Length: 461
Ligand SMILES: Nc1nc2c(ncn2[C@@H]2O[C@H](COP(=O)(O)OP(=O)(O)OP(=O)(O)O)[C@@H](O)[C@H]2O)c(=O)[nH]1
Ligand SMILES: [Mg+2]
Image (tube, rainbow, N blue to C red; front, side):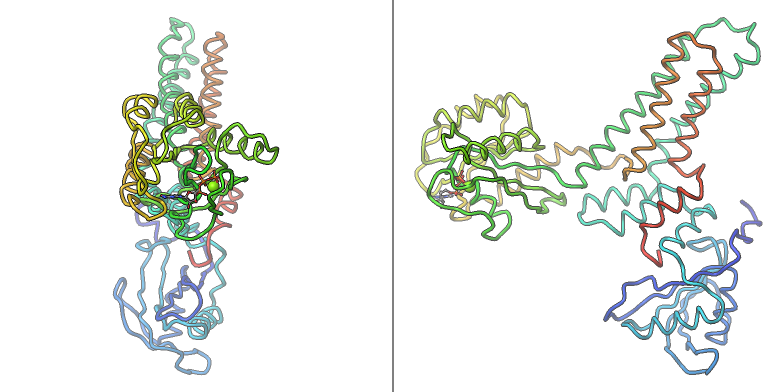
């Protein structure tokens, strides 16, 4: 970039209130663009040293009315969030003061910023990559510590070390193909190595896609299903998770008919916990539909909480469900409930039936005993299931969709090579893969793409 970066691409100056409106101690009014210094002078009658917080009076330049005394920080281009000259006024909060400061900023030459426009400028001025810009949005939107961590990873730019080797490998393949095009007579026509290289890239891309799809799914909430035969205390357990009487609990077996799903946060993860109808051979038509739904929920679950009754020995219904869980080979926790009554259930038999290392927890949903242990086991199981989150993954559907297109071009190249097509056809696919990858990182973007992405941002970001 060098010295020329001081002259940025935009001629207009944008402004917005960057904080939420409402009763608050402080609000932030942000200004970015070439007129920043003039605006600052017009409002405060002074020049500010860059990056130095200064208490300044803010006047209405027309009437010289004092609007506020605020902290102002001036950032000189290119050392600012957007890369342009910027000023941030930290005014008193509330509805009136920030609005009146914004109003005078607009009167002396700025225009209202569009959603995400500061970040868009940061991107265009080379301060942020596209994936980092999207991470900013994800960070603001985060609702669980898992989402927060994924967004932070992306913001810290951890995606680039993953994507750059993929891009480099593709460029090398493209170069090799071009060399062969330029000197066809010197080529031994050995496509084996090219194919090998391309397959390696494919594997890397697929691994990243898999990890990313998992991450996105977990961000939306892990599916945890409470299952078991009737009357074992499933609904009582759901109510314990939610700390409210959400599901009906009675001593009548077959009380729950329909599945009930609620969101809770456990160990920093969003869980979609589903209570289900007790699974047994039902005779009643409504109950039968409920049982079908329960089985479907079990089939879709990421994690099953299999509840059994400690006060009774395992019967045929328990065994049927146990077998189904073993067959599905899904992560699960066995919850032995009602330990306040006498313990009858054979934990060894359950362990045997579920295979080696089933986690078994004993609780009393009625008395609220063993819930801390249950939560602990649940967190451990989730940790195993989700895996290490330190590696970078894609953080939204746009990125995943774009990488999928890149993958299909790689497949196109592989197929073309295998079919013995001319190298220029293979090269075309590889080049397409590179272009799509650049679209993902923002190395190569269109105005339309940026508009779509930034339209979901908040104003002032
Ligand atoms: N003693 C004792 N009773 C419990 C415990 N947990 C639940 N119960 C009782 O067991 C009965 C059934 O509880 P629910 O939570 O409705 O059981 P469920 O598994 O949802 O039953 P269905 O909806 O019929 O499948 C109720 O009378 C509860 O009060 C417990 O830990 N100890
Ligand atoms: Mg129930």
